[in-house]
Image 1 (cartoon, rainbow, N blue to C red):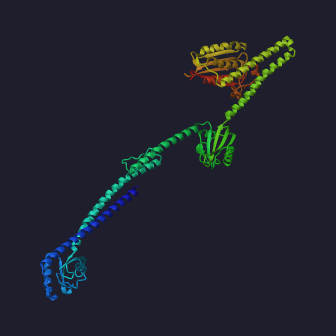
Image 2 (image 1 turned 60 degrees about the vertical axis):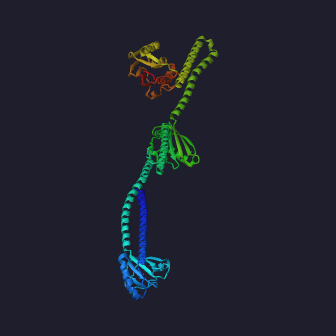
Image 3 (image 1 turned 120 degrees about the horizontal axis):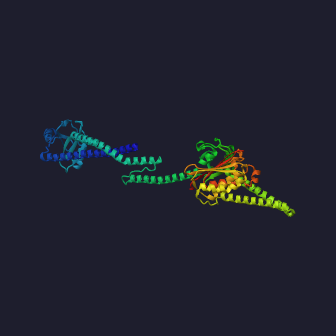
Length: 591
């Protein structure tokens, strides 16, 4: 911007200098012309006075030359100019400055020729004798006769030229001062013109550097002011657009980061250009490690690299399920989709990763559940059908056999009813279709009533039920479902504890917010390898013992789901031959 300001200043100074110089030349020339014109007019008046006062003497040159020479010298004293008298034939008859005999015929002189034509002749030329510029003015003694005698005055222009030089000195000094003033004014004008442009340029650079809050301060509503307003309007528009773009980017980034699927974008050259957070977790690599690199350079699984290569070559949708072993074993569903925008060329591939490990495990569990249900239902149904067929075949006539078979049919029917009831109960609990009615529960009274319900069952096996309860505990729970939880665990403890054993219940407050219930027994225990699976449906550690105890294999699964509905947790520790301990932690208040 400084170079523009300097150029503008120089241009303005040159224009002013040229204008002032031209004006000075015109003024000096006009002064000179006016001065010479005034001088000529004055000389003409003087010659008319001379003509009116003197007599033109007639005679030969030798006769008249002394007279006219004397007159010329006398008149020079009054006029200050050289006086020359010329006869009609061009011969000089008298001169104030030179000998007549040394002077040639003057009829060819331009001022004489002009005087004979117009009555008055004027010219400026260098004198052959004085060697300086002289102003010559000549008039006819008889304006009606072109061949009449001529009076001529000649005046040196040295004074005029000196006056012109003085004028030029004054003009030069004035021009210099004017030039300096013009330079200062031009710089100030250029500064006033370029300063708003500098501000606009500065604001434009700030906008280029993404500072969209920069604005031009508009002082005047001229063309530059309109440019500033246009820049401000552009900045407003850009700020709105960039705000919207940032919001869209933030929303897109938030969507990508919170997607449950991994998303990876690959350009047409095979380079990773985008990865969301879930993709980093699934692949075990950060976006910083992969983005910008070619897929073949990464350490991703071989099957994934092959899939990307195939997708880039075929540009078709590819779907596969691949087991990944890093960073942990997972089954991932991979969808590779080509990116082709309408009216634009192929841009690359979008890889969507979905962890289907849990889904496939649930499908497997569902399949196993159906198989287990079918198996569990088939056993009592087969028994019922078999004994019923035996009775129909004639065993009904034997009262003792008939009674025994009918008792078996009754027991298996009862077991079948309990199995179907537990299946329906578990289905409702898992689908969260079981409404819970929370109310304050006095845990002392609750535990006392619950243990009394199981005293008869424990007495039959000579098992001691022992309680260690912290007094004054209350909690918010569904009392019936809470009793179902405790009774199920206590019944398991009684069923799997040999005669003469012990089942303990301990309850205490962990803090102001949670209560811990510990149910332990001295039973047969659970092998360590089976502990992670005991809450699965139909899972039995000892299937023969479980069936003999009347269990359906669904009790612990129901317990776990009910505890989770109460926003609690259950853990188990066990040692084979020494017993099992279940620890339940429940919140005091449900939120």
